[in-house]
Image 1 (tube, rainbow, N blue to C red):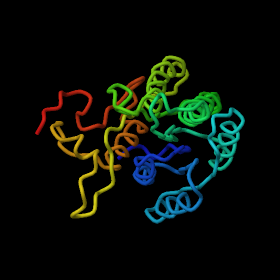
Image 2: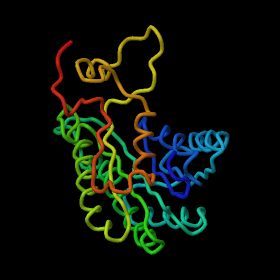
Image 3: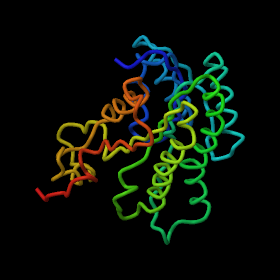
Length: 254
C-alpha cells in the first residue's frame, strides 16, 4: 500500500480517468481537492471518498489558464489542507476535436488555457511552498495521441505533447528541490459498455494491440497512486504509458 503521509489537490477535468484516480487514491491520501468539475459531480466524488474511509474536500475553480485563478486555487487548497500540499495531479483538460482548418482562435486559446496554462501556473503556485516543506510529487496527465497522430486530434494532442515536455523540464527544475515530477499517459480508456451495445470506436481501435481491449479508469488510477507513493521515489521525469501497448507495439489487424 502506498504511503499515507501525503495530501494534495487533484485538478481533474473532463477526462474519464479523473474520477477513478481520486477514488483510488482515497485510502492513501489525507485529502483530495478536485477542481474544474461541476459542483454536483464534485460532491458525489467527495461523498464516495468519505464513504470509503478517506478524507476529501471539494473546491470549485475555473482553471481557465489565468495565473490569478491558478494561484487562488493553490492558496485555498493549501488552507483547506492545513497549510501544506504534498501532491499535485494536473489532469484538468478539455477535448474539442475540430479539424485544424476549422479551429478558431477562441477555441485554440481556450484549449491551451485549460490544458497547458492552468497546470503551468498551478505548478508555479504550488512548487515553491512544496519545496520549502521538504518536497512533494507532481503528476501530469499526458495522452497516447501526443505521440501517435490521429485525425481531428491536432489541437488536443499538441497540448498533451506540451505537458509531457513540461514533465521532463520540471523534473530537471524541481527535482533538486525534492519534488518528483512524472506523468501518466492514458490510452483508450472507457467506462464499461452496457451489455449488448454497439462497439465504441475506441474498442475497435484497440483490436490487435497487446491488451486487445480498452482500458478502465482504474488502470489510470493505479498508475497515479503508484507515482505519488514512496514506492516510486527513484522515478523522475518519466511518462508512464498506460495504454495497453497501443503506442509501443505495432498493431496487428485482427
